[in-house]
Length: 541
Ligand code: SF4
Image 1 (cartoon, rainbow, N blue to C red):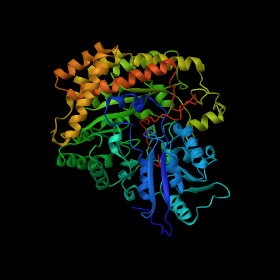
Image 2: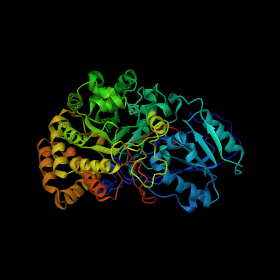
Image 3: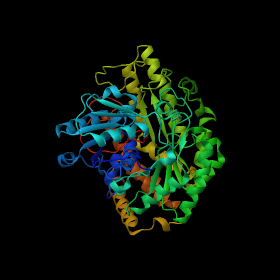
Image 4: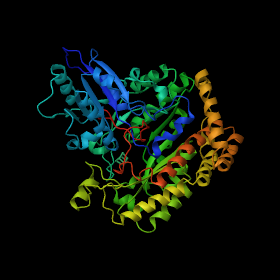
């Protein structure tokens, strides 16, 4: 649905989504291998707001991961709407500065301002919380006034708009072919309470859901664009937060895929106890879910207990990963360093985990305390929050020495992304995972455009990785095995992903990239790059 507020004036709204700082999860180095791709994933939240605005208002949408908003864009607008996560804070401030310079009124929503409104005194209006009654009051106010407020005004949502009333994101305002993967939200909220995570506080512990008709209608919308991405990522923080709902949705996805000759593949985020759900796993396989991001965080059971993530040890970890692989799901994993439970042995345990799990893609980060988390409260109580950060990689005063934690991070990244090891893990996936995927008709993907793109990707992988890289031998060992198994997609995919991971890790080890998503060390403001594999759905992200 659209905003129900009755409107008397026409307004021009410029939605600007801030660029992300590069990370392991952005795959930004890989864009050059694909013809049109310039960013990672469409920003669901801000596109949702754009779709919710009154139909008589004119909306222009700029994702600065693709192109910066111009002086002409700012001049056109009555209001500049911005949203983002904490990792985008410097870019959010930068957009506010440019909008103010152009004399425009600014509105900020999203996860970062909802968690820490005090960080953004320069905005005229703050939208706190998810889309809901606060959004309606904000729209009603902006309809009545284009005069700058005397002081900053806050509009807070007390009653959220049910997800079953969400309009589809405003895909008509963007070009999907500029994105590496598509995004879709089915649910919001998570029943767990991991100490470091702000999702339960921001979005609640009772997952709220869309209807299956909404989900398939959004897929239909994506398909309408000629160059839609072939992979769609369910941005829900935990796809099985409500297992019954996931079980009920999946047959509709299978049916949709069948009716359209399987034009898409899916990915999602879930907790590791997904491995205990054979029925859901079997349905996911049939719906063409190929990848699942699992916040494994640490292989150490005591550490999982301390961070209240015991659900990751519901099954022996390696057994759980093997089970997911056996349903054709490649696991990608988050790992956190700098935990209170870390010891001198943690590094060797993480390296052992990398070897035994055979997970190719791992995002290895330093612990960061986010506002509105139990971790934040505890560290604040204990005087361990670093407020004036002096350019450190984390805002946590670690129990181990800062230098040792960062050095451990470096050694773990170097270990994980040594090309020989990385391609060995991919090689393992060929038999352990890719071979278990369902063979589906290719008709849904056989378009001239897709064929052209596959040829360009094939050429680029061959040139940049197969011929010119200094890790070409490792690549060919893995690629030959995939090709022998008839897995052409896998051979190209390995090249595409490894190209980013190896380049990014080399940048990071040289000190050109940060050890944490949230690091305050010098951040580039201008270059358009892709976002992290994270999403959220307060106003904007
Ligand atoms: S880390 Fe994942 S499982 Fe834990 S509370 Fe956050 S979303 Fe839920």
